[in-house]
Length: 145
Image 1 (cartoon, rainbow, N blue to C red):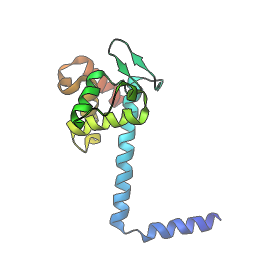
Image 2: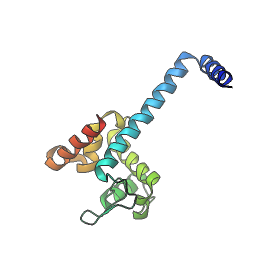
Image 3: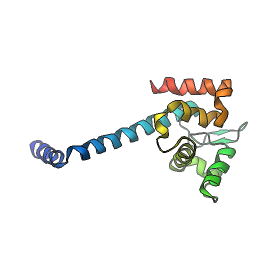
């Protein structure tokens, strides 16, 4: 049975043209780099990965500690109210909010610049002038190593 499965997989891979296989591999690398970056940020925001995490001081919610200003910004980007505070406690919706903001400010290849992604998430667009945001970026980069 194992030989049969291996033969089927081998024939499937062999039937893919080299450029299609390269595209497939690149797509997997993109997914992996996005996941690693988001995971590093969630580890900094809440190392317990508590979906219901709440920071009273900042009114930040969920595993990505989404602040009200981020929620307002993602709805502004979308042109209508799509997300509300309860969505911050949903992992899929939290990641969607994160990606929408990153793609809007850092472009479609946002995941290729971990420093800018982490800086934007923690210190907004002027993160380079904030020592706490610079420290946050360095912590995220350390998690990625």
